[in-house]
Amino acid sequence: MTAYFTMFSLATWIRNCDEHWFIPLFARWPGIMIHNARERQVDVRAMDALLLTGGGDISAEFLTQKVTQPKCITDSDSSRDRWEFSALREILAAKKPLLAICRGLQVLNVVTGGTLHLDIRDHDIAETTNIQKLRYDSAAVHRFSAVNSSHHQAIDTPGHGMIVEAWSCIDDIIEQVRLRDYRFGIGVQYHPERHSQYQSLFDDFYEHIVQVRR
Image (cartoon, rainbow, N blue to C red; front, side, top):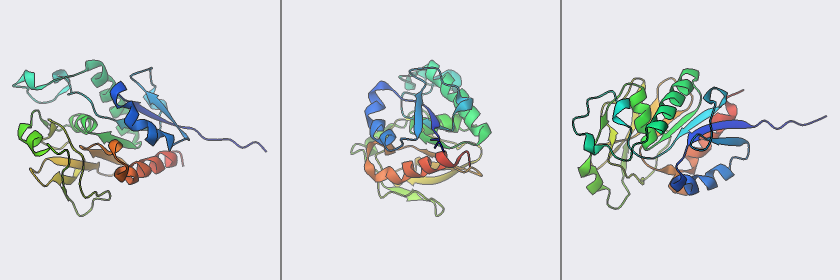
């Protein structure tokens, strides 16, 4: 009898400068093929899950709010925005596993109808050590004593179906959310790919990916 190995597919867009953070994580997932849309065309409909990663600001043309200070939007990439917004809508419609990190959380928030703080300078001051303690909702599953959060934009008004799970203890900036009535739909403003203490979050994501066809 021939044994068949099931290969799962994960769609993402990862900048060249961030790849080294994710390589050790992906090495733990031998059964998942990673499809980086920055390098090649990706058919999201054929994917089992989506990983949205960090990066520059979302282009003004993709925001649902009025931008009164265009200069506060920096390092934007409309090609990436176009792909991620489309990919995310496909994944949400199919309710497939989703993990959104930093910029990815902001993309998720905009796609679901939310708005952003476009420049939180005081938050940058609070983050000079790059570590923050969080205040968690009682229902939050993934909890960490402190997180490595560094960003100048963040959620202002949460999107539809979004449940806030954690806030910064310093200034109440939203740092973690989950999607209502969704098997695995989590967004974090911090960077779990950069430290092993967050491994449980990635393990949970992996388990939901391999369960998606069951």
